[in-house]
Image (cartoon, rainbow, N blue to C red):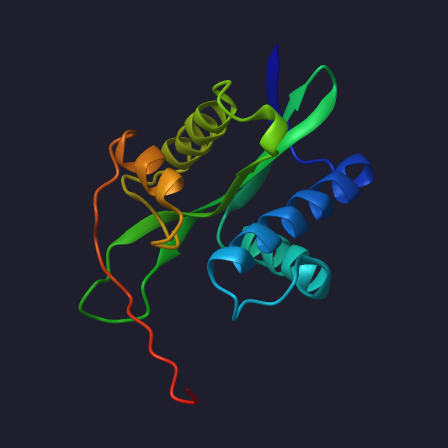
Length: 159
């Protein structure tokens, strides 16, 4: 049975840190320019907590048999900095499920909780970013009603 609950920094910090490191290392395999999970974990956890505090956000933990299985971080009051896209939106910073818990509906449960939180806090649109090479994640989001919105292209100038 999967339980989704709010992050508790007194008991979840190491589990969240482990998930962030694993997620970052997975992304680094797709995009080698990204730093290792160990190199970025503490700063990224601080960043997520700052974003939640500044933009009405929350981190939710998924548990299976009382063990952390993944997390989602959502902020409900984001806005673009550009005047041509001023509408507020909720932003999913991260969603991650440990490999051994995948394909059991945990990511769907985490996303449903993030969307519930966003709606409850007045958001009418949810956005997120995903690496194009993360095909399974792209498919997951599209299958849940997300659509392509922008493409960010990158080019290294030192090669």
